[in-house]
Image (cartoon, rainbow, N blue to C red):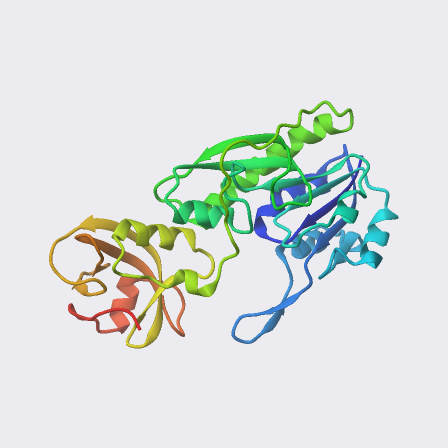
Length: 312
Protein backbone atom coordinates (compact mmCIF):
# COMPACT_ATOMS: atom_id res chain seq x y z
CA UNK A 1 0.00 0.00 0.00
CA UNK A 2 1.50 3.29 -1.14
CA UNK A 3 1.12 6.25 1.23
CA UNK A 4 1.71 10.00 0.99
CA UNK A 5 2.10 11.61 4.42
CA UNK A 6 1.20 15.25 5.12
CA UNK A 7 2.47 16.76 8.40
CA UNK A 8 4.42 19.58 9.98
CA UNK A 9 4.34 19.70 13.79
CA UNK A 10 5.55 17.45 16.61
CA UNK A 11 2.20 15.66 16.97
CA UNK A 12 2.81 14.08 13.55
CA UNK A 13 6.20 12.57 14.37
CA UNK A 14 5.26 9.20 15.98
CA UNK A 15 2.89 8.37 13.09
CA UNK A 16 5.54 9.38 10.55
CA UNK A 17 8.22 7.29 12.25
CA UNK A 18 5.88 4.30 12.19
CA UNK A 19 5.39 4.71 8.43
CA UNK A 20 9.14 5.10 7.86
CA UNK A 21 9.88 1.90 9.79
CA UNK A 22 6.93 -0.19 8.60
CA UNK A 23 7.53 -3.02 6.14
CA UNK A 24 3.79 -3.24 5.42
CA UNK A 25 3.53 0.04 3.51
CA UNK A 26 5.50 2.05 0.97
CA UNK A 27 6.05 5.67 1.95
CA UNK A 28 5.94 7.41 -1.42
CA UNK A 29 6.30 11.03 -0.25
CA UNK A 30 6.23 13.29 2.78
CA UNK A 31 4.67 16.74 2.35
CA UNK A 32 5.39 19.51 4.84
CA UNK A 33 5.24 23.28 5.13
CA UNK A 34 8.08 25.46 3.76
CA UNK A 35 10.87 26.69 6.02
CA UNK A 36 9.85 29.91 7.77
CA UNK A 37 11.64 32.68 9.61
CA UNK A 38 11.27 32.40 13.36
CA UNK A 39 12.43 34.02 16.60
CA UNK A 40 14.03 37.37 17.29
CA UNK A 41 16.74 36.83 14.72
CA UNK A 42 14.24 35.71 12.08
CA UNK A 43 16.31 32.59 11.50
CA UNK A 44 14.97 30.25 8.82
CA UNK A 45 13.44 27.26 10.63
CA UNK A 46 12.30 23.95 9.15
CA UNK A 47 9.33 21.94 10.37
CA UNK A 48 9.80 19.06 12.79
CA UNK A 49 8.54 16.69 10.09
CA UNK A 50 11.24 17.85 7.67
CA UNK A 51 13.90 17.38 10.36
CA UNK A 52 12.60 13.86 11.05
CA UNK A 53 12.61 12.87 7.38
CA UNK A 54 16.13 14.16 6.80
CA UNK A 55 17.54 12.54 9.93
CA UNK A 56 16.02 9.22 8.83
CA UNK A 57 17.79 9.50 5.47
CA UNK A 58 14.63 9.96 3.40
CA UNK A 59 15.30 13.47 2.08
CA UNK A 60 14.44 12.34 -1.45
CA UNK A 61 10.81 11.76 -0.41
CA UNK A 62 10.33 15.31 0.88
CA UNK A 63 8.01 17.89 -0.70
CA UNK A 64 7.71 21.38 0.78
CA UNK A 65 4.70 23.30 -0.47
CA UNK A 66 3.10 26.52 0.67
CA UNK A 67 0.01 25.77 -1.44
CA UNK A 68 -1.04 22.15 -1.78
CA UNK A 69 -3.99 23.30 -3.88
CA UNK A 70 -1.66 24.36 -6.69
CA UNK A 71 -2.44 22.32 -9.85
CA UNK A 72 1.25 21.64 -10.43
CA UNK A 73 1.66 20.18 -6.97
CA UNK A 74 -1.49 18.06 -7.29
CA UNK A 75 -0.18 16.71 -10.62
CA UNK A 76 3.12 15.65 -9.01
CA UNK A 77 1.35 13.84 -6.17
CA UNK A 78 -1.10 12.20 -8.60
CA UNK A 79 1.81 10.77 -10.60
CA UNK A 80 2.87 8.82 -7.48
CA UNK A 81 -0.46 6.90 -7.66
CA UNK A 82 -0.91 6.70 -3.88
CA UNK A 83 -3.43 4.39 -2.25
CA UNK A 84 -3.78 6.52 0.87
CA UNK A 85 -3.08 9.99 2.25
CA UNK A 86 -2.27 10.20 5.95
CA UNK A 87 -2.54 13.74 7.32
CA UNK A 88 -1.46 14.84 10.80
CA UNK A 89 -0.84 18.35 12.15
CA UNK A 90 -0.18 19.65 8.65
CA UNK A 91 -1.45 23.24 8.66
CA UNK A 92 -3.13 23.53 5.25
CA UNK A 93 -6.55 22.62 3.88
CA UNK A 94 -6.65 19.88 1.23
CA UNK A 95 -9.11 20.77 -1.53
CA UNK A 96 -11.53 18.42 -3.29
CA UNK A 97 -9.23 17.79 -6.24
CA UNK A 98 -6.35 16.74 -3.98
CA UNK A 99 -8.58 14.61 -1.72
CA UNK A 100 -9.68 12.62 -4.77
CA UNK A 101 -6.10 11.60 -5.66
CA UNK A 102 -5.60 8.54 -3.39
CA UNK A 103 -7.18 5.25 -4.49
CA UNK A 104 -8.65 4.47 -1.05
CA UNK A 105 -9.06 7.79 0.76
CA UNK A 106 -7.36 10.58 2.71
CA UNK A 107 -7.40 10.17 6.50
CA UNK A 108 -6.54 12.63 9.24
CA UNK A 109 -5.16 11.90 12.71
CA UNK A 110 -6.71 14.60 14.89
CA UNK A 111 -5.92 15.29 18.56
CA UNK A 112 -9.46 15.46 19.96
CA UNK A 113 -12.61 13.40 20.27
CA UNK A 114 -14.43 14.83 17.29
CA UNK A 115 -16.68 16.72 16.83
CA UNK A 116 -15.19 18.53 19.85
CA UNK A 117 -12.25 20.83 19.13
CA UNK A 118 -12.16 20.91 15.36
CA UNK A 119 -9.37 23.14 14.14
CA UNK A 120 -5.69 23.94 14.46
CA UNK A 121 -5.03 23.80 18.22
CA UNK A 122 -7.19 21.11 19.86
CA UNK A 123 -4.68 20.13 22.55
CA UNK A 124 -4.14 23.71 23.71
CA UNK A 125 -7.83 24.59 23.88
CA UNK A 126 -8.77 21.39 25.70
CA UNK A 127 -6.23 22.19 28.41
CA UNK A 128 -7.18 25.88 28.54
CA UNK A 129 -10.84 25.00 28.95
CA UNK A 130 -10.11 22.70 31.87
CA UNK A 131 -11.24 19.51 30.14
CA UNK A 132 -10.64 16.27 32.02
CA UNK A 133 -10.93 14.02 28.95
CA UNK A 134 -9.73 14.39 25.38
CA UNK A 135 -8.44 11.89 22.84
CA UNK A 136 -7.51 11.15 19.24
CA UNK A 137 -9.73 10.55 16.21
CA UNK A 138 -8.86 9.11 12.81
CA UNK A 139 -11.40 10.19 10.22
CA UNK A 140 -11.98 10.17 6.48
CA UNK A 141 -11.31 13.67 5.20
CA UNK A 142 -13.78 15.76 3.23
CA UNK A 143 -13.75 19.41 2.19
CA UNK A 144 -15.14 20.63 5.52
CA UNK A 145 -12.89 21.34 8.50
CA UNK A 146 -12.39 18.14 10.54
CA UNK A 147 -15.95 17.05 9.76
CA UNK A 148 -15.43 13.72 8.01
CA UNK A 149 -16.70 10.29 8.99
CA UNK A 150 -14.96 8.65 11.95
CA UNK A 151 -12.87 5.51 11.46
CA UNK A 152 -11.53 5.07 14.98
CA UNK A 153 -10.90 7.05 18.14
CA UNK A 154 -9.56 6.63 21.66
CA UNK A 155 -10.08 8.72 24.80
CA UNK A 156 -7.28 10.00 27.04
CA UNK A 157 -7.46 11.53 30.52
CA UNK A 158 -5.98 14.98 31.05
CA UNK A 159 -4.05 14.92 34.32
CA UNK A 160 -4.22 17.97 36.61
CA UNK A 161 -0.52 18.70 36.14
CA UNK A 162 -0.44 18.14 32.36
CA UNK A 163 0.61 21.03 30.19
CA UNK A 164 -0.13 20.96 26.47
CA UNK A 165 3.39 19.79 25.56
CA UNK A 166 3.18 16.73 27.83
CA UNK A 167 -0.40 16.01 26.79
CA UNK A 168 0.38 16.28 23.08
CA UNK A 169 3.17 13.69 23.38
CA UNK A 170 0.77 11.23 24.99
CA UNK A 171 -1.88 11.88 22.34
CA UNK A 172 0.67 11.55 19.52
CA UNK A 173 1.54 8.05 20.70
CA UNK A 174 -2.17 7.15 20.77
CA UNK A 175 -2.44 8.49 17.21
CA UNK A 176 0.39 6.22 16.08
CA UNK A 177 -1.32 3.18 17.57
CA UNK A 178 -4.66 4.06 15.96
CA UNK A 179 -2.92 4.49 12.60
CA UNK A 180 -1.26 1.10 12.96
CA UNK A 181 -4.65 -0.49 13.62
CA UNK A 182 -6.28 1.26 10.67
CA UNK A 183 -3.55 0.31 8.21
CA UNK A 184 -4.03 -3.32 9.18
CA UNK A 185 -7.53 -3.25 7.67
CA UNK A 186 -7.33 -0.41 5.14
CA UNK A 187 -6.19 -2.42 2.11
CA UNK A 188 -9.12 -4.83 2.41
CA UNK A 189 -11.53 -2.03 3.34
CA UNK A 190 -12.51 -3.86 6.53
CA UNK A 191 -13.19 -0.63 8.43
CA UNK A 192 -16.42 1.15 9.34
CA UNK A 193 -17.22 4.81 8.76
CA UNK A 194 -19.45 6.54 11.31
CA UNK A 195 -20.83 10.08 11.05
CA UNK A 196 -19.74 12.49 13.75
CA UNK A 197 -22.41 12.83 16.45
CA UNK A 198 -22.94 15.61 18.97
CA UNK A 199 -22.32 19.32 19.08
CA UNK A 200 -19.18 20.58 17.38
CA UNK A 201 -16.74 22.96 19.06
CA UNK A 202 -13.70 24.68 17.61
CA UNK A 203 -10.04 25.16 18.48
CA UNK A 204 -8.78 28.06 16.37
CA UNK A 205 -5.15 28.80 15.67
CA UNK A 206 -3.46 30.46 18.64
CA UNK A 207 -2.58 34.15 18.60
CA UNK A 208 0.02 35.86 20.75
CA UNK A 209 -2.65 37.89 22.57
CA UNK A 210 -4.28 34.65 23.75
CA UNK A 211 -1.46 34.40 26.28
CA UNK A 212 -2.05 37.74 28.05
CA UNK A 213 -3.22 37.07 31.62
CA UNK A 214 -6.29 38.85 32.97
CA UNK A 215 -5.67 38.80 36.72
CA UNK A 216 -9.34 39.49 37.42
CA UNK A 217 -10.07 35.89 36.44
CA UNK A 218 -9.92 33.19 39.11
CA UNK A 219 -6.59 31.41 39.60
CA UNK A 220 -7.91 28.10 38.22
CA UNK A 221 -8.77 29.71 34.89
CA UNK A 222 -5.38 31.41 34.75
CA UNK A 223 -3.61 28.15 35.60
CA UNK A 224 -5.39 26.44 32.70
CA UNK A 225 -4.01 29.17 30.45
CA UNK A 226 -0.52 28.50 31.82
CA UNK A 227 -0.93 24.77 31.11
CA UNK A 228 -2.58 25.14 27.73
CA UNK A 229 -0.43 27.76 26.03
CA UNK A 230 2.89 25.93 26.02
CA UNK A 231 5.17 25.98 24.08
CA UNK A 232 3.69 29.12 22.43
CA UNK A 233 2.60 31.84 23.06
CA UNK A 234 2.77 30.94 26.78
CA UNK A 235 0.76 32.67 29.50
CA UNK A 236 2.36 36.03 30.15
CA UNK A 237 2.05 39.30 32.02
CA UNK A 238 4.46 42.20 32.63
CA UNK A 239 6.70 43.13 35.53
CA UNK A 240 8.49 46.50 35.52
CA UNK A 241 7.32 46.86 31.90
CA UNK A 242 9.15 43.64 30.91
CA UNK A 243 7.43 40.58 29.45
CA UNK A 244 7.04 37.95 32.18
CA UNK A 245 6.05 34.40 31.20
CA UNK A 246 4.70 31.86 33.65
CA UNK A 247 5.39 28.15 33.07
CA UNK A 248 4.49 26.34 36.29
CA UNK A 249 2.13 27.28 39.09
CA UNK A 250 -0.62 26.06 41.40
CA UNK A 251 -3.86 27.44 42.86
CA UNK A 252 -4.44 28.32 46.49
CA UNK A 253 -7.21 30.18 48.31
CA UNK A 254 -6.45 33.49 49.95
CA UNK A 255 -8.40 36.57 50.99
CA UNK A 256 -7.02 40.09 50.83
CA UNK A 257 -5.11 41.94 48.15
CA UNK A 258 -6.29 43.07 44.75
CA UNK A 259 -6.00 41.22 41.41
CA UNK A 260 -2.51 41.31 39.83
CA UNK A 261 -0.85 42.18 43.16
CA UNK A 262 2.11 40.15 44.41
CA UNK A 263 1.00 39.46 47.97
CA UNK A 264 4.03 37.43 49.05
CA UNK A 265 7.46 36.32 47.83
CA UNK A 266 8.93 33.18 49.35
CA UNK A 267 12.16 31.29 48.82
CA UNK A 268 10.92 29.40 45.77
CA UNK A 269 7.59 30.97 44.78
CA UNK A 270 5.64 34.17 44.20
CA UNK A 271 2.00 34.48 45.21
CA UNK A 272 -0.15 36.63 42.90
CA UNK A 273 -3.70 37.63 43.81
CA UNK A 274 -6.37 36.69 41.29
CA UNK A 275 -10.13 37.09 41.17
CA UNK A 276 -12.54 35.32 43.48
CA UNK A 277 -10.32 35.15 46.59
CA UNK A 278 -7.84 32.91 44.80
CA UNK A 279 -4.08 33.11 44.41
CA UNK A 280 -1.70 31.76 41.81
CA UNK A 281 1.47 30.44 43.43
CA UNK A 282 4.13 30.65 40.72
CA UNK A 283 7.21 28.38 40.58
CA UNK A 284 8.75 28.72 37.11
CA UNK A 285 9.04 31.89 35.00
CA UNK A 286 10.92 33.69 32.25
CA UNK A 287 11.56 37.42 32.17
CA UNK A 288 12.19 39.20 28.89
CA UNK A 289 15.73 38.68 27.63
CA UNK A 290 16.49 35.75 29.93
CA UNK A 291 16.07 31.98 29.86
CA UNK A 292 13.32 30.05 31.60
CA UNK A 293 14.16 29.60 35.30
CA UNK A 294 12.77 28.67 38.69
CA UNK A 295 11.37 31.45 40.84
CA UNK A 296 14.21 30.79 43.29
CA UNK A 297 16.71 31.61 40.51
CA UNK A 298 14.66 34.60 39.40
CA UNK A 299 14.48 36.10 42.90
CA UNK A 300 18.23 35.72 43.37
CA UNK A 301 18.76 38.27 40.60
CA UNK A 302 15.63 40.44 40.87
CA UNK A 303 14.33 42.28 43.90
CA UNK A 304 10.57 41.81 44.00
CA UNK A 305 8.57 43.02 46.97
CA UNK A 306 5.02 42.33 48.08
CA UNK A 307 2.69 45.00 46.78
CA UNK A 308 4.10 45.08 43.24
CA UNK A 309 1.35 44.82 40.62
CA UNK A 310 1.77 42.78 37.47
CA UNK A 311 0.47 43.86 34.08
CA UNK A 312 0.97 46.55 31.49
